[in-house]
Structure formats: C-alpha cells, structure tokens
Length: 100
Length: 494
Image 1 (cartoon, helix red, strand yellow):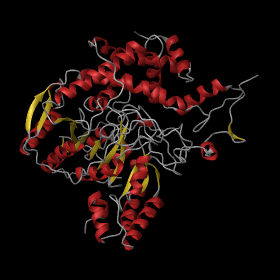
Image 2 (tube, each protein chain N blue to C red):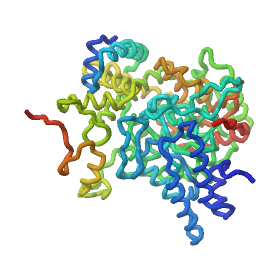
Image 3 (cartoon, rainbow over the protein chains, first blue to last red):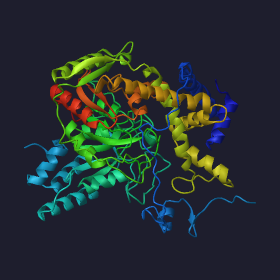
C-alpha cells in the first residue's frame, strides 16, 4: 500500500499536526519508503499465532479502591497539576473559546 | 595519585566509605569536568549544586556513623527523560522546554535514596527517538572519540542515550541512567567503549519516565564496567505499584552474584545475525568474543532465531504506533509548549502546538504510528506486527532451551560520523538490527566493550539472557570484560 498527498494530509490531520504543502510533499516519498519496507511482514505465516499483548507474563493489578490510595497522585494537588500549564486561569486550564 | 574522575562507582563508593576522600571532593571534581566540556554538548542542564548537596549529606552521614547507601557519594548524570522534581525535564524537545516536574521519577528517587547525587540532565535524541543524538532540539552531542586518521570528523555518540554515553566516556560522570526502547542503552555504550544493561522489561519502574513506546521502554544503568552496572541496576530496580507493568519480584543481589566462571554454561550464536557484507572488524570482534567465552569455560553452540530479519520492520510498526498514542498528550493545554495563532480555535491550537513542538523524526514516527493504527490498516500493519512479535519472542524461548545466554555484536558498525546517516531514516533504523529483537521480547541484554576497530573506535559485544536472568548476562559480560582488558580512552580535545 502506498500513500498519496491526500492520504498524508488526512493522517496529519488525525495526528493533529499542522503541515505545510512543502512538508507534505517531502513526507509522501519518505512515508512510502518506510511503509514499503515494513510491508515485508506480510510474508510471515502467522496462522494460529496470537498477537502479543504482554511481553513478560505479568498480571495487571488493581490499586486499592480508596480515595488518595497514593497521596502523591491523589486529590488536593490542584496547584501542582496546574504548575506547568501554559495558560492556567482561576484554578483551571485555559483554552481558546470552543463554543460560539 | 589517580584522579577522582578516573574512578567508577565501586571505587568511589569504597573510597568515600573508607575516608580516602570525601563525597564532596568527588562531586567537585566531576562538576569541574562537566563545566569544562561544553564542546561535547552532553548536558542540557548542569546541576552542580545538587551534586554537592547530595555529597554533603553523604559526608555528614558518614561522619555521624550512619549506614551508607549502595551509591553513596557517587555523582551521576540523569538522562533528561526522567522527571526530576524542580529541575527542567525536556526529553530534548522544544515541546517540553521549560517543563519543571512537580514530582520525581521512581528510578531517580531510588538513586538519590541510595546516596547518588545529580550532576545534571543529559542530552538525548528527541523523545528518545534516534540512534545518533542528532534529533535533540538542544543540539547534537559530539562523541569524545575520534578516528585515528587525523581527520577529526565529529562522530555520533550513539542514541538515544548519547549524552549519557559521551559523558561517561569523557569522564564527566562515572555512570549515568539510560533508557532503552530498541537499543538506546546498548548501541551508545558500544559506540563509546562503556558498558550498559537493559534489564528485563518491568524491572525498572517507568513511572516518571517520559513515554516513547510503553511496551518496550526500559531504564537501565550505563557505566565504565560490569560491576558498576550491577551496583547501579540494584539501586534502580524494584517493584513500583505506580507502574502497571512493574515486576513484583525481589531485586537480586547482582553485584554479590558476579562470577566470570562460565563452566557448564552454554552460549548461543544465532546464525541469522551473520549478515551479508558484515563489517570485517565487527565480525572479527564477534569471533574474539566467542573465543573469550570458551576460555571462560562456556560451551558455544550454534542456534537459530528464524524471524530475526522481521524484527526491525516489526519494531518500526509497534514503536511508532505506541509513540503516536503516547505523544497525543502534548496538546498545549496541560503542560509544555502552546502555540496559539491569532484567532485560532482549539483544534488549530493543537495542530500548531504540535507542529512547533515536535522535530522532524518525532513527526515522522507519529505519522507512521497514526497511519498503522488507522481504520482499515490496523489489522494489516499493527495486528500483523504483534503476531510477528509473538514469533520473535517464541524464537528466543526455543533458543533458550538449548543455551543460557546469546552472544552477538551490539551494532553493525563502530560509531559513524554525524550527518552520515541522517539523510535517510531507513539507513539510521538499520543501526539497531542486533539490539531490537531482544527489546521486542523484553529480554535482559547488555553491551560491553570488546576492543578497538582499525579506525581506533570502540566496538561492543552484546549479550542477551533469559527473562529475569540479568545475572547470567552480567556474568558473561564480566567474562568478556576480564579477557578484553579494554582500557582505551578518547584523547582529550574538548
């Protein structure tokens, strides 16, 4: 499968990446080169093979179902959560207007 | 007298404990080397005051007769992928420039608890995506090594942990943290003549490590020798409830268990790793490694890992797929860069922020990942890759029925010149051909220096072990280290 400019533009939009026409033109052959190379996986016989879900057998744990099970990541951390926000306002994350 | 900056972890720890010198003297000596090495660009941020503060605490503890930790008095470099509370953590990206974590990663906290101090945050490939350190937003790291042709070409320190490898090789720190997704500890270690181990997936907590590909990312130590790697890995590893894939197992006493006698052990040599047109020096160093392991008492056998040739394409579907999901978090809202063009709405802000904050290689991988996960292509690419990954892992399971550890070269060549491979992404990806299969299978693997090639550059040998058998890997590494007697150092030019 190879991708054309329109497909690459669509992927960029899905990935929320703004790309210029020039960048788009450069990406098409690059992505096609990489995709053509990974497509050799198609020749592997995978009949009856399960896709890997865990590389090392390990059961997934549930944390204790209590409030503030870990005080470091529990509640009451508003200021720390907002400390690196590019636009924190009134104790919230600020974003551009989304409703007209 | 030996300079303090020539000492490794074990020597510093014992010298501090016995009072031959103070931790403060050690920290000051390494701080001075860091300050004088800006030409290498190994550090994004230096934190001499933190190194001194940690050292002062160790000196005070010793004076007070308190017990000292495993890493007491050892100043280290921290790859700038680990969140460090109050110290900028960038993943070498513009996106996270100025990001100051409000918490400490589990691995770095364990190291501080063990008595280590931080010399600074080390440069890397942007979001750990690269094999040469050329994708850093903060400029490429220059290897301290040079070819012996007098040409002085600037060489790659490897990647993504290239700041770590360059800093250790140049004696700016005795050891450093690395992270390895497809070879990012082992390949830079090989390029710079140092040792580095990626433990079994899950040994070291991923909590507080900026995520690249979560099913592959694993932290590990990089240091001058095998013993130092064992000491530091003990300090870094351990169960962490905050990482859902953390292994709930005790941390073995790897340092105490070191034993270079390989009698009764079988070493597998995978025939599929003998590539057509393999670099002659790399092939010769592999042969030498086989001879050394035989000399250590091991039996060497031929093994087959039939799906080896599919490991790289498999990796370059799975890693970008996971990266595209992980990096979706950079939205210009919660942390990191925001680019808000005049009159832009929320969607435009996302796209502009991500366009401005990510470098070309990161964008390339996000694009590939988004494509292989998109409706209509998911099964053909992603599911197929996960099935092939099962087969690659099964190859190792089969091989380990016949051998205890596997020996291969770490990389297909010695360090290449900066700029030599950056034009073609595929050519760069091929540099990880020997390291990626063990990553896909989650296995412990390490690189140890084997010697110099005809250009005077270090070559590494690569050992892969069974799940949880870091000890077997370290022991085989030690056997090679004792026989290689690698003592070459780059001549100081910086």
